[in-house]
Length: 348
Length: 269
Image (tube, each protein chain N blue to C red):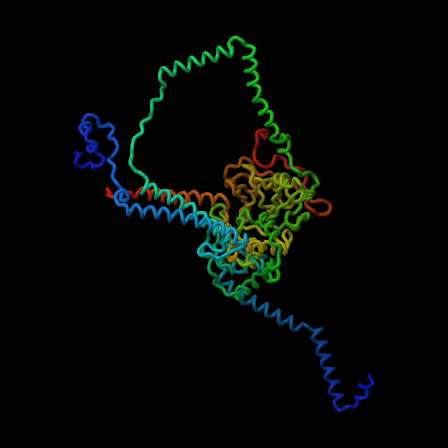
Protein backbone atom coordinates (compact mmCIF):
# COMPACT_ATOMS: atom_id res chain seq x y z
CA UNK A 1 0.00 0.00 0.00
CA UNK A 2 1.57 3.28 -1.02
CA UNK A 3 1.20 6.35 1.12
CA UNK A 4 -0.94 7.96 -1.61
CA UNK A 5 -3.86 5.67 -0.80
CA UNK A 6 -4.01 6.62 2.87
CA UNK A 7 -6.57 9.32 3.48
CA UNK A 8 -5.06 12.68 4.17
CA UNK A 9 -6.19 13.17 7.72
CA UNK A 10 -4.77 9.85 8.93
CA UNK A 11 -1.27 11.04 8.17
CA UNK A 12 0.63 13.21 10.62
CA UNK A 13 2.19 15.35 7.81
CA UNK A 14 0.28 18.45 8.77
CA UNK A 15 2.00 18.42 12.16
CA UNK A 16 4.94 19.89 10.24
CA UNK A 17 7.93 19.31 12.51
CA UNK A 18 7.10 15.60 13.03
CA UNK A 19 6.93 14.97 9.32
CA UNK A 20 9.97 12.72 9.28
CA UNK A 21 9.08 10.82 12.47
CA UNK A 22 6.82 8.43 10.54
CA UNK A 23 9.66 6.66 8.88
CA UNK A 24 11.51 6.24 12.17
CA UNK A 25 8.64 5.03 14.38
CA UNK A 26 5.27 3.97 12.97
CA UNK A 27 3.75 4.16 16.47
CA UNK A 28 4.75 7.73 17.19
CA UNK A 29 2.05 10.01 18.61
CA UNK A 30 0.52 11.74 15.60
CA UNK A 31 -0.75 14.57 17.79
CA UNK A 32 -4.06 16.33 17.41
CA UNK A 33 -5.58 17.06 14.01
CA UNK A 34 -5.60 20.74 13.09
CA UNK A 35 -8.59 22.69 14.30
CA UNK A 36 -11.21 23.41 11.65
CA UNK A 37 -13.74 26.17 12.17
CA UNK A 38 -17.51 25.68 12.22
CA UNK A 39 -19.85 27.89 10.26
CA UNK A 40 -20.82 29.56 13.54
CA UNK A 41 -17.15 30.44 14.17
CA UNK A 42 -16.95 32.23 10.83
CA UNK A 43 -20.42 33.65 10.30
CA UNK A 44 -21.90 35.74 13.10
CA UNK A 45 -25.40 35.43 11.59
CA UNK A 46 -25.17 31.64 11.79
CA UNK A 47 -24.06 31.94 15.41
CA UNK A 48 -27.10 34.14 16.09
CA UNK A 49 -29.33 31.54 14.45
CA UNK A 50 -27.87 28.82 16.66
CA UNK A 51 -28.37 30.99 19.72
CA UNK A 52 -32.02 31.49 18.80
CA UNK A 53 -32.50 27.74 18.20
CA UNK A 54 -31.06 26.89 21.61
CA UNK A 55 -33.17 29.57 23.27
CA UNK A 56 -36.25 28.27 21.43
CA UNK A 57 -35.63 24.72 22.70
CA UNK A 58 -35.26 25.95 26.27
CA UNK A 59 -38.44 28.02 25.86
CA UNK A 60 -40.37 24.98 24.57
CA UNK A 61 -39.14 23.11 27.63
CA UNK A 62 -40.49 25.85 29.89
CA UNK A 63 -43.85 25.82 28.11
CA UNK A 64 -44.01 22.02 28.42
CA UNK A 65 -43.39 22.27 32.16
CA UNK A 66 -46.23 24.78 32.41
CA UNK A 67 -48.31 22.33 30.36
CA UNK A 68 -47.39 19.57 32.81
CA UNK A 69 -48.59 21.60 35.78
CA UNK A 70 -51.71 22.66 33.87
CA UNK A 71 -52.64 19.11 32.89
CA UNK A 72 -52.04 17.96 36.44
CA UNK A 73 -54.57 20.54 37.59
CA UNK A 74 -57.07 20.20 34.73
CA UNK A 75 -57.58 16.46 34.20
CA UNK A 76 -59.37 14.34 36.79
CA UNK A 77 -57.42 11.17 37.62
CA UNK A 78 -60.03 8.82 36.16
CA UNK A 79 -60.68 10.67 32.87
CA UNK A 80 -60.32 8.31 29.89
CA UNK A 81 -59.91 9.65 26.35
CA UNK A 82 -59.58 7.89 23.00
CA UNK A 83 -56.31 8.67 21.24
CA UNK A 84 -55.45 7.11 17.92
CA UNK A 85 -53.56 4.71 17.65
CA UNK A 86 -53.05 3.98 21.36
CA UNK A 87 -56.70 3.48 22.26
CA UNK A 88 -58.56 4.40 25.43
CA UNK A 89 -55.97 5.94 27.74
CA UNK A 90 -55.98 8.04 30.88
CA UNK A 91 -55.87 11.74 29.95
CA UNK A 92 -53.68 12.48 32.98
CA UNK A 93 -51.09 9.82 32.24
CA UNK A 94 -50.83 10.73 28.57
CA UNK A 95 -50.57 14.50 29.04
CA UNK A 96 -48.19 14.29 32.01
CA UNK A 97 -45.96 11.87 30.13
CA UNK A 98 -45.92 13.89 26.93
CA UNK A 99 -45.28 17.27 28.58
CA UNK A 100 -42.59 15.96 30.92
CA UNK A 101 -40.98 14.10 28.02
CA UNK A 102 -40.92 17.24 25.86
CA UNK A 103 -39.61 19.36 28.76
CA UNK A 104 -36.69 17.01 29.45
CA UNK A 105 -35.93 16.33 25.78
CA UNK A 106 -35.78 20.03 24.92
CA UNK A 107 -33.34 20.77 27.76
CA UNK A 108 -31.10 17.96 26.48
CA UNK A 109 -31.45 18.91 22.82
CA UNK A 110 -30.78 22.58 23.62
CA UNK A 111 -27.66 21.71 25.61
CA UNK A 112 -26.33 19.44 22.85
CA UNK A 113 -26.99 22.04 20.14
CA UNK A 114 -25.36 24.73 22.26
CA UNK A 115 -22.24 22.62 22.86
CA UNK A 116 -21.94 21.57 19.22
CA UNK A 117 -22.42 24.94 17.57
CA UNK A 118 -21.44 27.69 20.00
CA UNK A 119 -19.14 26.43 22.78
CA UNK A 120 -15.42 26.26 21.95
CA UNK A 121 -14.55 23.06 20.12
CA UNK A 122 -10.78 23.45 20.10
CA UNK A 123 -9.20 20.18 21.20
CA UNK A 124 -6.20 20.16 23.52
CA UNK A 125 -4.29 17.47 25.41
CA UNK A 126 -4.04 17.75 29.19
CA UNK A 127 -1.18 15.45 30.23
CA UNK A 128 -1.47 13.38 33.42
CA UNK A 129 0.93 14.22 36.22
CA UNK A 130 3.29 11.51 37.49
CA UNK A 131 1.73 9.09 39.98
CA UNK A 132 4.82 8.75 42.19
CA UNK A 133 5.31 11.41 44.86
CA UNK A 134 8.56 13.36 45.04
CA UNK A 135 11.27 12.07 47.45
CA UNK A 136 10.80 15.13 49.71
CA UNK A 137 7.08 14.45 50.12
CA UNK A 138 7.73 10.76 50.81
CA UNK A 139 10.35 11.56 53.45
CA UNK A 140 8.03 14.06 55.15
CA UNK A 141 5.11 11.55 55.30
CA UNK A 142 7.32 8.86 56.81
CA UNK A 143 8.73 11.28 59.37
CA UNK A 144 5.22 12.49 60.35
CA UNK A 145 4.07 8.87 60.79
CA UNK A 146 7.03 8.01 63.01
CA UNK A 147 6.37 11.16 65.09
CA UNK A 148 2.73 10.21 65.54
CA UNK A 149 3.58 6.67 66.61
CA UNK A 150 6.07 7.96 69.14
CA UNK A 151 3.75 10.64 70.55
CA UNK A 152 0.78 8.27 70.98
CA UNK A 153 3.09 5.83 72.78
CA UNK A 154 1.28 2.89 71.19
CA UNK A 155 4.43 0.77 71.18
CA UNK A 156 5.21 1.59 74.80
CA UNK A 157 1.74 0.89 76.24
CA UNK A 158 0.64 -2.52 74.88
CA UNK A 159 -2.35 -2.64 77.26
CA UNK A 160 -4.04 0.23 75.42
CA UNK A 161 -3.15 -1.20 72.05
CA UNK A 162 -4.49 -4.66 72.85
CA UNK A 163 -7.72 -3.48 74.46
CA UNK A 164 -8.33 -1.15 71.52
CA UNK A 165 -7.89 -3.99 69.02
CA UNK A 166 -10.19 -6.15 71.16
CA UNK A 167 -12.90 -3.47 71.28
CA UNK A 168 -12.77 -2.95 67.53
CA UNK A 169 -12.94 -6.66 66.86
CA UNK A 170 -15.98 -7.06 69.17
CA UNK A 171 -18.12 -4.19 67.81
CA UNK A 172 -19.20 -5.95 64.56
CA UNK A 173 -20.70 -8.76 66.68
CA UNK A 174 -23.70 -6.53 67.49
CA UNK A 175 -24.50 -6.34 63.79
CA UNK A 176 -24.28 -10.10 63.42
CA UNK A 177 -26.54 -10.68 66.44
CA UNK A 178 -29.14 -8.29 64.98
CA UNK A 179 -29.44 -10.54 61.92
CA UNK A 180 -31.38 -12.92 64.16
CA UNK A 181 -34.23 -10.37 64.04
CA UNK A 182 -34.79 -11.10 60.35
CA UNK A 183 -37.57 -13.51 61.34
CA UNK A 184 -38.45 -16.62 63.30
CA UNK A 185 -36.64 -19.86 62.52
CA UNK A 186 -38.58 -22.08 60.13
CA UNK A 187 -38.49 -25.04 62.55
CA UNK A 188 -40.53 -27.92 61.07
CA UNK A 189 -43.02 -25.70 59.22
CA UNK A 190 -41.73 -26.69 55.80
CA UNK A 191 -42.50 -30.34 56.48
CA UNK A 192 -46.18 -29.93 57.35
CA UNK A 193 -49.32 -28.31 56.00
CA UNK A 194 -52.72 -27.63 57.57
CA UNK A 195 -54.11 -30.85 56.11
CA UNK A 196 -54.85 -33.61 58.60
CA UNK A 197 -57.08 -36.64 58.84
CA UNK A 198 -60.79 -35.78 58.60
CA UNK A 199 -60.43 -32.23 57.20
CA UNK A 200 -62.95 -31.67 54.43
CA UNK A 201 -61.91 -30.36 51.00
CA UNK A 202 -63.48 -26.92 50.57
CA UNK A 203 -64.15 -25.66 47.03
CA UNK A 204 -62.27 -22.34 46.61
CA UNK A 205 -65.05 -21.02 44.34
CA UNK A 206 -68.12 -21.68 46.46
CA UNK A 207 -66.50 -22.03 49.91
CA UNK A 208 -68.57 -25.22 50.32
CA UNK A 209 -67.31 -28.77 50.94
CA UNK A 210 -67.01 -30.89 47.81
CA UNK A 211 -68.99 -34.02 47.06
CA UNK A 212 -67.44 -36.71 44.84
CA UNK A 213 -70.30 -36.39 42.35
CA UNK A 214 -69.53 -32.65 41.93
CA UNK A 215 -66.17 -33.47 40.39
CA UNK A 216 -66.63 -34.77 36.85
CA UNK A 217 -64.00 -36.23 34.55
CA UNK A 218 -62.16 -33.46 32.73
CA UNK A 219 -62.98 -30.77 35.26
CA UNK A 220 -60.54 -28.79 37.37
CA UNK A 221 -61.27 -27.61 40.90
CA UNK A 222 -59.18 -25.89 43.55
CA UNK A 223 -59.62 -26.65 47.22
CA UNK A 224 -58.43 -25.46 50.62
CA UNK A 225 -58.63 -27.24 53.97
CA UNK A 226 -61.69 -26.93 56.17
CA UNK A 227 -61.32 -24.12 58.70
CA UNK A 228 -59.08 -21.89 56.57
CA UNK A 229 -60.94 -18.69 55.66
CA UNK A 230 -59.84 -16.08 53.14
CA UNK A 231 -60.02 -13.30 55.73
CA UNK A 232 -57.80 -15.16 58.19
CA UNK A 233 -54.75 -13.15 59.13
CA UNK A 234 -52.28 -15.77 57.90
CA UNK A 235 -54.38 -17.02 54.98
CA UNK A 236 -51.71 -16.30 52.38
CA UNK A 237 -48.99 -18.08 54.36
CA UNK A 238 -51.20 -21.12 54.83
CA UNK A 239 -52.63 -21.39 51.31
CA UNK A 240 -49.09 -21.17 49.94
CA UNK A 241 -48.63 -24.72 51.25
CA UNK A 242 -52.22 -26.03 51.46
CA UNK A 243 -53.48 -25.19 47.95
CA UNK A 244 -54.91 -28.26 46.28
CA UNK A 245 -55.70 -29.08 42.67
CA UNK A 246 -58.48 -31.65 42.19
CA UNK A 247 -59.11 -33.50 38.96
CA UNK A 248 -60.95 -36.66 38.12
CA UNK A 249 -59.32 -39.25 35.88
CA UNK A 250 -61.08 -42.42 34.76
CA UNK A 251 -59.60 -45.08 37.11
CA UNK A 252 -58.46 -47.25 34.19
CA UNK A 253 -56.36 -44.31 32.90
CA UNK A 254 -54.39 -43.98 36.16
CA UNK A 255 -51.04 -45.71 35.64
CA UNK A 256 -49.57 -45.32 39.12
CA UNK A 257 -50.90 -47.84 41.68
CA UNK A 258 -50.36 -45.67 44.73
CA UNK A 259 -52.09 -42.75 43.00
CA UNK A 260 -55.15 -44.91 42.36
CA UNK A 261 -55.11 -46.17 45.93
CA UNK A 262 -54.94 -42.62 47.31
CA UNK A 263 -57.72 -41.37 45.03
CA UNK A 264 -61.45 -41.63 45.53
CA UNK A 265 -62.95 -43.34 42.47
CA UNK A 266 -60.45 -41.54 40.26
CA UNK A 267 -60.68 -38.18 42.03
CA UNK A 268 -57.08 -37.21 42.75
CA UNK A 269 -55.86 -34.31 44.87
CA UNK A 270 -52.37 -32.92 44.18
CA UNK A 271 -50.45 -30.02 45.69
CA UNK A 272 -50.78 -26.90 43.51
CA UNK A 273 -47.24 -25.79 44.40
CA UNK A 274 -44.49 -26.62 41.90
CA UNK A 275 -41.63 -28.65 43.39
CA UNK A 276 -39.06 -26.58 41.51
CA UNK A 277 -39.30 -23.08 43.01
CA UNK A 278 -42.87 -23.06 44.30
CA UNK A 279 -44.91 -21.33 41.58
CA UNK A 280 -48.64 -22.04 41.67
CA UNK A 281 -48.99 -24.63 38.95
CA UNK A 282 -52.33 -25.44 37.42
CA UNK A 283 -52.09 -25.27 33.63
CA UNK A 284 -53.95 -28.56 33.39
CA UNK A 285 -54.56 -30.18 30.01
CA UNK A 286 -57.58 -32.41 30.47
CA UNK A 287 -56.89 -34.71 27.52
CA UNK A 288 -53.23 -35.46 28.26
CA UNK A 289 -53.53 -35.02 32.06
CA UNK A 290 -50.34 -32.95 31.92
CA UNK A 291 -49.84 -30.03 34.25
CA UNK A 292 -47.47 -27.30 33.12
CA UNK A 293 -45.72 -24.82 35.38
CA UNK A 294 -45.80 -21.34 33.83
CA UNK A 295 -42.50 -20.29 35.43
CA UNK A 296 -39.96 -22.78 34.06
CA UNK A 297 -42.10 -25.22 32.02
CA UNK A 298 -41.80 -28.18 34.40
CA UNK A 299 -44.44 -30.66 33.26
CA UNK A 300 -46.07 -33.29 35.48
CA UNK A 301 -48.17 -36.25 34.40
CA UNK A 302 -51.17 -36.38 36.73
CA UNK A 303 -52.17 -39.81 35.42
CA UNK A 304 -48.82 -41.28 36.51
CA UNK A 305 -48.28 -40.12 40.08
CA UNK A 306 -47.54 -36.54 38.94
CA UNK A 307 -44.20 -37.77 37.58
CA UNK A 308 -41.94 -35.03 36.18
CA UNK A 309 -41.86 -35.53 32.41
CA UNK A 310 -40.15 -32.29 31.45
CA UNK A 311 -38.36 -29.36 33.01
CA UNK A 312 -36.24 -28.58 36.04
CA UNK A 313 -38.54 -29.84 38.84
CA UNK A 314 -36.84 -32.47 40.98
CA UNK A 315 -39.79 -34.21 42.64
CA UNK A 316 -43.26 -35.31 41.61
CA UNK A 317 -46.12 -33.18 42.98
CA UNK A 318 -47.12 -34.50 46.43
CA UNK A 319 -50.50 -36.24 46.45
CA UNK A 320 -53.03 -35.90 49.26
CA UNK A 321 -54.75 -39.11 50.21
CA UNK A 322 -58.51 -38.54 50.17
CA UNK A 323 -61.70 -40.40 50.99
CA UNK A 324 -65.35 -39.70 51.73
CA UNK A 325 -66.76 -39.04 55.20
CA UNK A 326 -70.10 -40.19 56.63
CA UNK A 327 -71.91 -37.16 55.25
CA UNK A 328 -70.69 -37.89 51.72
CA UNK A 329 -68.13 -35.10 51.46
CA UNK A 330 -64.52 -35.48 50.31
CA UNK A 331 -62.04 -35.43 53.20
CA UNK A 332 -58.30 -35.73 53.67
CA UNK A 333 -56.96 -38.96 55.14
CA UNK A 334 -53.86 -37.28 56.56
CA UNK A 335 -51.23 -34.70 55.68
CA UNK A 336 -49.11 -34.89 52.54
CA UNK A 337 -46.62 -37.76 52.79
CA UNK A 338 -43.72 -35.51 51.79
CA UNK A 339 -43.05 -31.76 52.11
CA UNK A 340 -44.84 -29.67 49.45
CA UNK A 341 -43.14 -27.13 47.27
CA UNK A 342 -39.48 -26.71 46.36
CA UNK A 343 -36.67 -28.78 47.87
CA UNK A 344 -34.72 -27.27 50.77
CA UNK A 345 -31.51 -28.12 52.64
CA UNK A 346 -32.99 -30.35 55.35
CA UNK A 347 -35.49 -32.07 53.00
CA UNK A 348 -32.89 -34.52 51.81
CA UNK B 1 -128.17 -8.83 40.52
CA UNK B 2 -131.72 -7.72 40.19
CA UNK B 3 -130.90 -5.88 37.02
CA UNK B 4 -129.20 -8.88 35.52
CA UNK B 5 -132.05 -11.25 36.27
CA UNK B 6 -134.52 -8.66 34.89
CA UNK B 7 -132.78 -8.89 31.51
CA UNK B 8 -132.90 -12.67 31.26
CA UNK B 9 -135.60 -12.51 28.68
CA UNK B 10 -133.76 -10.02 26.50
CA UNK B 11 -133.53 -11.20 22.86
CA UNK B 12 -129.75 -11.21 23.03
CA UNK B 13 -129.53 -13.09 26.36
CA UNK B 14 -129.20 -16.44 24.66
CA UNK B 15 -126.35 -15.15 22.46
CA UNK B 16 -124.45 -13.80 25.49
CA UNK B 17 -124.86 -17.06 27.39
CA UNK B 18 -123.73 -19.00 24.34
CA UNK B 19 -120.63 -16.81 23.92
CA UNK B 20 -119.75 -17.16 27.62
CA UNK B 21 -120.13 -20.92 27.43
CA UNK B 22 -117.97 -21.11 24.33
CA UNK B 23 -115.25 -18.98 25.90
CA UNK B 24 -115.26 -21.09 29.05
CA UNK B 25 -115.06 -24.35 27.12
CA UNK B 26 -112.27 -23.04 24.89
CA UNK B 27 -110.36 -21.70 27.86
CA UNK B 28 -110.70 -24.93 29.79
CA UNK B 29 -109.65 -26.90 26.76
CA UNK B 30 -106.58 -24.77 26.24
CA UNK B 31 -105.72 -25.05 29.92
CA UNK B 32 -106.16 -28.77 30.30
CA UNK B 33 -105.13 -30.03 26.90
CA UNK B 34 -101.72 -28.56 25.91
CA UNK B 35 -100.88 -31.82 24.19
CA UNK B 36 -101.14 -30.54 20.66
CA UNK B 37 -98.71 -27.69 21.34
CA UNK B 38 -96.21 -30.01 22.93
CA UNK B 39 -96.67 -32.31 20.03
CA UNK B 40 -95.93 -29.45 17.67
CA UNK B 41 -92.77 -28.59 19.65
CA UNK B 42 -91.73 -32.18 19.66
CA UNK B 43 -92.20 -32.50 15.94
CA UNK B 44 -90.22 -29.28 15.43
CA UNK B 45 -87.50 -30.76 17.63
CA UNK B 46 -87.47 -34.06 15.75
CA UNK B 47 -87.38 -32.09 12.51
CA UNK B 48 -84.31 -30.21 13.80
CA UNK B 49 -82.69 -33.51 14.78
CA UNK B 50 -83.52 -34.88 11.34
CA UNK B 51 -81.97 -31.84 9.61
CA UNK B 52 -79.03 -31.91 12.02
CA UNK B 53 -78.37 -35.54 11.22
CA UNK B 54 -78.14 -34.67 7.51
CA UNK B 55 -75.68 -31.84 8.22
CA UNK B 56 -73.76 -34.14 10.54
CA UNK B 57 -73.43 -36.86 7.91
CA UNK B 58 -71.93 -34.37 5.46
CA UNK B 59 -69.71 -32.29 7.75
CA UNK B 60 -68.77 -34.33 10.79
CA UNK B 61 -69.24 -38.07 10.27
CA UNK B 62 -65.89 -38.62 8.54
CA UNK B 63 -64.05 -38.05 11.84
CA UNK B 64 -66.67 -38.52 14.57
CA UNK B 65 -68.28 -41.64 13.03
CA UNK B 66 -71.68 -42.08 11.42
CA UNK B 67 -73.48 -42.27 14.76
CA UNK B 68 -71.23 -39.90 16.73
CA UNK B 69 -69.46 -42.88 18.28
CA UNK B 70 -66.03 -41.45 17.43
CA UNK B 71 -63.18 -42.85 15.30
CA UNK B 72 -59.40 -42.76 15.53
CA UNK B 73 -59.58 -39.28 13.99
CA UNK B 74 -62.11 -37.73 16.36
CA UNK B 75 -63.59 -38.27 19.81
CA UNK B 76 -67.05 -39.67 20.54
CA UNK B 77 -69.79 -37.05 20.66
CA UNK B 78 -72.13 -39.07 22.82
CA UNK B 79 -72.92 -36.96 25.88
CA UNK B 80 -70.97 -33.83 24.89
CA UNK B 81 -74.26 -31.93 24.72
CA UNK B 82 -75.53 -29.10 22.57
CA UNK B 83 -73.35 -26.52 24.37
CA UNK B 84 -70.18 -28.22 23.09
CA UNK B 85 -71.50 -28.27 19.50
CA UNK B 86 -72.54 -24.63 19.69
CA UNK B 87 -69.08 -23.63 21.00
CA UNK B 88 -67.03 -25.72 18.56
CA UNK B 89 -69.00 -24.91 15.41
CA UNK B 90 -70.01 -21.31 16.14
CA UNK B 91 -66.40 -20.31 16.84
CA UNK B 92 -65.31 -22.00 13.61
CA UNK B 93 -63.15 -24.62 15.32
CA UNK B 94 -65.24 -27.44 13.91
CA UNK B 95 -65.26 -28.83 11.29
CA UNK B 96 -61.50 -29.13 11.76
CA UNK B 97 -59.26 -28.39 8.79
CA UNK B 98 -56.46 -30.83 9.67
CA UNK B 99 -55.28 -32.88 12.63
CA UNK B 100 -52.75 -31.16 14.87
CA UNK B 101 -51.88 -30.14 18.40
CA UNK B 102 -54.87 -27.86 18.61
CA UNK B 103 -57.77 -26.97 16.31
CA UNK B 104 -57.66 -23.20 15.74
CA UNK B 105 -60.48 -20.70 15.44
CA UNK B 106 -61.59 -20.17 11.80
CA UNK B 107 -64.36 -18.30 9.93
CA UNK B 108 -67.70 -19.91 10.74
CA UNK B 109 -69.21 -21.83 7.81
CA UNK B 110 -72.65 -22.72 9.22
CA UNK B 111 -75.58 -20.41 9.95
CA UNK B 112 -76.80 -20.23 13.56
CA UNK B 113 -79.94 -22.14 12.51
CA UNK B 114 -77.84 -24.97 11.06
CA UNK B 115 -75.65 -24.99 14.19
CA UNK B 116 -78.77 -25.33 16.33
CA UNK B 117 -79.90 -28.29 14.19
CA UNK B 118 -76.48 -29.94 14.50
CA UNK B 119 -76.56 -29.30 18.26
CA UNK B 120 -80.03 -30.83 18.49
CA UNK B 121 -78.83 -33.95 16.72
CA UNK B 122 -75.70 -34.37 18.88
CA UNK B 123 -77.72 -33.67 22.04
CA UNK B 124 -80.08 -36.47 21.01
CA UNK B 125 -77.17 -38.95 21.17
CA UNK B 126 -76.83 -38.64 24.93
CA UNK B 127 -77.48 -36.14 27.74
CA UNK B 128 -74.89 -33.40 28.15
CA UNK B 129 -74.49 -29.67 28.82
CA UNK B 130 -77.28 -27.68 27.16
CA UNK B 131 -76.68 -24.50 25.15
CA UNK B 132 -77.13 -21.67 27.67
CA UNK B 133 -79.88 -19.08 27.30
CA UNK B 134 -79.08 -15.40 27.30
CA UNK B 135 -80.35 -15.13 30.86
CA UNK B 136 -77.62 -17.56 31.93
CA UNK B 137 -74.62 -15.88 30.34
CA UNK B 138 -75.52 -12.18 30.10
CA UNK B 139 -73.00 -10.56 32.48
CA UNK B 140 -75.15 -7.47 33.10
CA UNK B 141 -75.13 -6.60 36.79
CA UNK B 142 -72.64 -9.32 37.75
CA UNK B 143 -69.97 -8.80 40.43
CA UNK B 144 -66.82 -7.86 38.50
CA UNK B 145 -64.52 -7.86 41.55
CA UNK B 146 -65.64 -11.35 42.56
CA UNK B 147 -65.22 -12.38 38.92
CA UNK B 148 -61.62 -11.15 39.11
CA UNK B 149 -60.98 -13.32 42.19
CA UNK B 150 -62.47 -16.35 40.47
CA UNK B 151 -60.60 -15.59 37.27
CA UNK B 152 -57.24 -15.48 39.06
CA UNK B 153 -57.98 -18.74 40.89
CA UNK B 154 -59.34 -20.74 37.96
CA UNK B 155 -58.45 -19.19 34.62
CA UNK B 156 -55.48 -16.79 34.78
CA UNK B 157 -52.85 -19.53 34.87
CA UNK B 158 -53.50 -20.32 31.19
CA UNK B 159 -55.44 -17.37 29.77
CA UNK B 160 -53.31 -14.60 31.39
CA UNK B 161 -54.50 -12.02 33.90
CA UNK B 162 -56.52 -10.09 31.34
CA UNK B 163 -57.55 -12.95 29.04
CA UNK B 164 -54.83 -12.40 26.46
CA UNK B 165 -54.11 -16.13 26.25
CA UNK B 166 -50.80 -17.97 26.51
CA UNK B 167 -48.71 -20.96 25.45
CA UNK B 168 -49.08 -24.54 26.68
CA UNK B 169 -47.07 -27.68 25.91
CA UNK B 170 -46.17 -29.06 22.49
CA UNK B 171 -47.88 -26.48 20.28
CA UNK B 172 -51.04 -26.22 22.35
CA UNK B 173 -52.14 -22.83 23.62
CA UNK B 174 -54.84 -21.06 25.59
CA UNK B 175 -56.51 -18.67 23.12
CA UNK B 176 -57.08 -14.97 23.69
CA UNK B 177 -60.60 -14.12 24.84
CA UNK B 178 -60.57 -10.66 23.32
CA UNK B 179 -63.20 -11.39 20.67
CA UNK B 180 -64.99 -14.28 22.37
CA UNK B 181 -68.68 -13.68 23.08
CA UNK B 182 -70.10 -14.18 26.60
CA UNK B 183 -72.11 -17.14 25.29
CA UNK B 184 -69.01 -18.94 24.02
CA UNK B 185 -67.02 -18.21 27.20
CA UNK B 186 -69.90 -19.72 29.18
CA UNK B 187 -70.03 -22.79 26.92
CA UNK B 188 -66.25 -23.26 27.16
CA UNK B 189 -66.40 -23.28 30.97
CA UNK B 190 -69.35 -25.63 30.84
CA UNK B 191 -67.92 -28.15 28.37
CA UNK B 192 -64.11 -27.88 28.53
CA UNK B 193 -63.25 -27.80 24.82
CA UNK B 194 -60.08 -29.58 23.63
CA UNK B 195 -57.49 -29.51 26.43
CA UNK B 196 -59.25 -26.96 28.59
CA UNK B 197 -60.66 -28.51 31.78
CA UNK B 198 -64.37 -27.99 32.35
CA UNK B 199 -65.83 -25.98 35.21
CA UNK B 200 -69.27 -27.57 35.66
CA UNK B 201 -72.11 -25.94 37.62
CA UNK B 202 -71.46 -28.33 40.50
CA UNK B 203 -68.09 -26.75 41.26
CA UNK B 204 -68.63 -23.32 39.67
CA UNK B 205 -72.26 -22.20 39.80
CA UNK B 206 -73.94 -20.18 37.05
CA UNK B 207 -73.63 -16.92 38.97
CA UNK B 208 -69.86 -17.31 39.26
CA UNK B 209 -69.57 -17.97 35.54
CA UNK B 210 -71.42 -14.69 34.97
CA UNK B 211 -69.04 -12.87 37.33
CA UNK B 212 -66.08 -14.27 35.39
CA UNK B 213 -67.56 -13.21 32.04
CA UNK B 214 -68.22 -9.73 33.45
CA UNK B 215 -64.58 -9.53 34.60
CA UNK B 216 -63.13 -10.65 31.26
CA UNK B 217 -65.31 -8.19 29.37
CA UNK B 218 -64.34 -5.37 31.72
CA UNK B 219 -60.59 -5.91 31.38
CA UNK B 220 -60.49 -7.09 27.77
CA UNK B 221 -63.36 -5.44 25.88
CA UNK B 222 -63.41 -2.92 23.00
CA UNK B 223 -64.01 -0.07 25.41
CA UNK B 224 -61.58 -1.23 28.10
CA UNK B 225 -59.27 1.64 29.00
CA UNK B 226 -55.54 1.01 29.32
CA UNK B 227 -54.55 4.01 31.46
CA UNK B 228 -50.85 3.77 30.62
CA UNK B 229 -51.30 3.44 26.87
CA UNK B 230 -49.88 0.20 25.48
CA UNK B 231 -50.96 -2.90 27.38
CA UNK B 232 -48.19 -4.99 25.73
CA UNK B 233 -50.11 -8.23 26.11
CA UNK B 234 -51.02 -7.62 29.74
CA UNK B 235 -47.98 -9.64 30.83
CA UNK B 236 -46.91 -7.16 33.46
CA UNK B 237 -43.55 -5.62 34.36
CA UNK B 238 -41.36 -8.12 32.50
CA UNK B 239 -42.66 -7.32 29.03
CA UNK B 240 -42.92 -3.63 29.90
CA UNK B 241 -39.32 -3.56 31.13
CA UNK B 242 -38.09 -5.41 28.06
CA UNK B 243 -39.96 -2.96 25.82
CA UNK B 244 -38.48 -0.02 27.72
CA UNK B 245 -34.93 -1.37 27.52
CA UNK B 246 -35.02 -2.34 23.86
CA UNK B 247 -37.08 0.43 22.32
CA UNK B 248 -36.50 3.25 24.83
CA UNK B 249 -32.75 2.79 25.14
CA UNK B 250 -32.56 1.84 21.45
CA UNK B 251 -34.11 5.17 20.48
CA UNK B 252 -31.65 7.04 22.73
CA UNK B 253 -28.69 5.16 21.21
CA UNK B 254 -29.98 5.93 17.70
CA UNK B 255 -30.29 9.65 18.55
CA UNK B 256 -26.77 9.70 20.03
CA UNK B 257 -25.36 8.03 16.90
CA UNK B 258 -27.23 10.45 14.67
CA UNK B 259 -25.90 13.45 16.61
CA UNK B 260 -22.31 12.17 16.54
CA UNK B 261 -22.49 11.20 12.84
CA UNK B 262 -23.26 14.75 11.76
CA UNK B 263 -20.26 17.04 12.00
CA UNK B 264 -20.72 20.64 12.94
CA UNK B 265 -17.68 21.75 10.93
CA UNK B 266 -18.13 24.31 8.15
CA UNK B 267 -16.05 22.25 5.71
CA UNK B 268 -17.30 18.69 5.59
CA UNK B 269 -14.53 16.13 5.23
